Length: 301
Image (cartoon, rainbow, N blue to C red; front, side, top):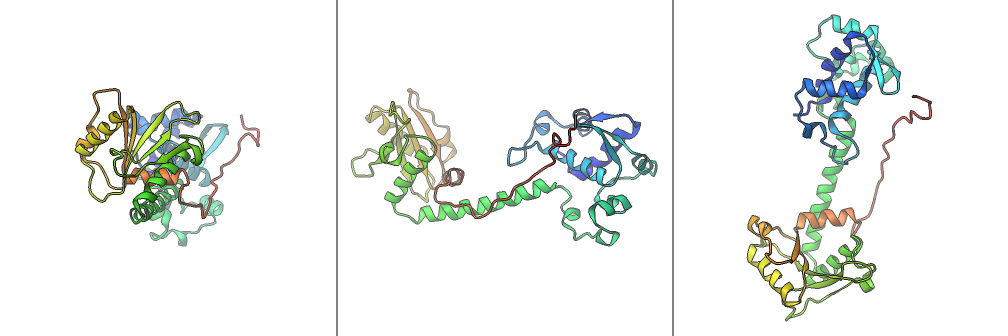
């Protein structure tokens, strides 16, 4: 399991106790070995996919050490322990955390905090497992999940024909077919043999994708997928997308046609996520920019 950034602090400073210069890559590897992390854990990304979780937590531990005057940069991506850091280790602390750092005058001065601010009600103290980026990203994921649930409720409340049109619009936004006008057409009539829509696979219309759109509450079972594959065969089609507002049984998801037919199954949760990703039926209400130091500006090597 990936340790939280405060659990990383004592092993991190201990690695630097030799007083030598250390690099970010070297220190990260030593810490990964110390915590017996697997390759998968080392390479696990934050929800945004922008940074790796473990490296991000090590970077925050380092950042707090710098604010406390326990380490200093020697050059870009290289650093060493300071005399203050060595003196702290001489006291043989059982752990190093934010509560301890906030008792250090240098940390108080650089962060504008005092001993009186060192309260258990402080978010940074109580949420010890999360770095600031993780707190922001986890909050974002909560907002996104609530939005997806609300979006799915709206879709389920719409008419079947509206849902079929929505599905075609989504596929167009995902890059299929070009424009709404010439990309696809909804069928949605009796005798359609289980096909609700057709969309061009590309702007030139070199191939087509057949759509089945089920605005259901019931779980979609394997026989429904069989019917869809049969409907594709009846149209001489080899590609299909089955989209539902509910979900699929494991048997339905495991089904693979024996012929050359390729089908993609999209459930309600995935549908809502795709609509959010491609800005269909949603709008942006706020944007937050996260910035960091541009070391090139300062000429760091």
